[in-house]
Image 1 (cartoon, one colour):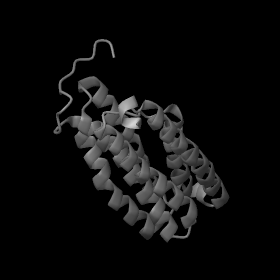
Image 2 (image 1 turned 90 degrees about the horizontal axis):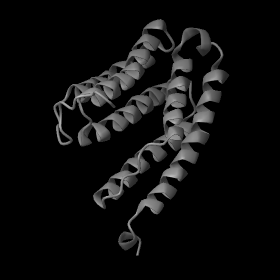
Image 3 (image 1 turned 180 degrees about the horizontal axis):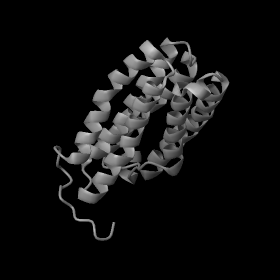
Length: 189
């Protein structure tokens, strides 16, 4: 980003962007409790919106003040924890079926492990545009299940969830292929 001043180096841990990410993580149990206690309500969807919106905030702050390795790990992890926490609470409330949520969970945490393994070998597999759309669709499915006006039509949120599942599987396969292509020749042998 032209004109951006890097305030924090790549190894910094205590950064404003990471603080926003930690707040997102800390807010997830609050959201889950609201989903279980109130279900679809304006309060619940407002908390969900704030959690989802702060994903963009921490990214903006990180780009302005310097991205870090810890932020590159924590931010996507927070995305997964927040979305899956909300989905699990919706499964508990019988709004979402467990199977699509299980597919998403296996993919998300399987890829965290896979990308960590590749990172130890010096291979980076950056997020793709499809993966960002996948995260957005997952968030939209949760939002649709929590918004009182769309929650009255559960097939809408469930349909979005299944579209997100398809994109989750497709982008997961793409990460695996990209990781194999990116491996150094000596590591592949």
